[in-house]
Amino acid sequence: MAHRLVAGIDVGSTTCKVVLADGPDVVGSAIAATGANSQRTVERLLSGLLADCGRRRAGLACVVSTGYGRRLVRSADQIVSEITAIARGAAALSGRGKPPRTVIDIGGQDSKVISLDEWGILRDFTMNDKCAAGTGRFLEVMARAMEVELDALGSLSLRAEKVLPVNSLCTVFAESEVISLLSRGEEVCDIVAGIHASIAKRVAAMARKVCVAGRVVFVGGPALNAGLRRALEMELGVKLFVPKHPQLVAAFGAAEIAAAGGAARGGAAAADER
Image (cartoon, rainbow, N blue to C red; front, side):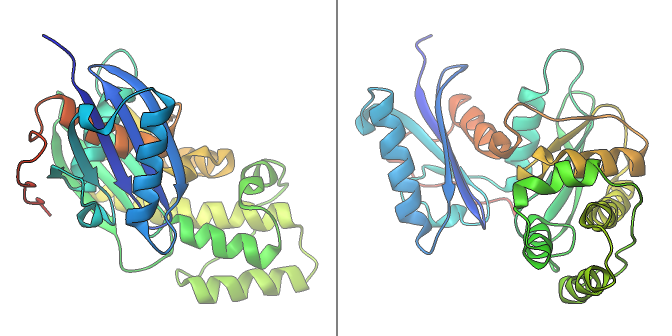
């Protein structure tokens, strides 16, 4: 059967991700800050990817959108929830062997834990979308308070000699705690380790609600943070698997859904299941 060129688009609260796939093969991907106009960002990324791959917009068989701003993608033929897209993408990207049974996703504005059955099918999930604690936004605020680059948090945490507790679950109060620790002359490395431990405790509590079993996959941009990954592993008592590009998992899952028979271009967008 001939392959179809498809696109998976994940419009997150902080970044937009686009994956182009031709059958089972990813032919291109792109990430950019969502900005004030997510539709414009999506169109720029999609047009750039098509040009880079020498493809034309008319050759796209199906576009599936997901994420925080999934309904804003006017070119989408189908809309799917983040939960569905992440579960599909994590199962496909977790390598050889048995599918993952637990997926932890930390996004810009929320965090999610997804439970899958032995065939990689969605079984249950829980999410935190009412508070920034335990999310990428929380990390951004803490990095700004300490005047360090967001990308540096992981390596700083790994150099910590102790873990200074950051107890507040409220981002504003946690920021005040961090500023107080800095004023006492505490080492930034130790404060960062405490921040990661705080997030790990919150996410682990969510994970236990849906049961942590089998292979556990960690996705989302914060999965690139080695210090946070270690804190989560210590809190859960398991080894986490992180895909090569963890921030693209939802977009890849959307592309997988499109390739597997999403709505044909020009058809009505499917209703979101959430």
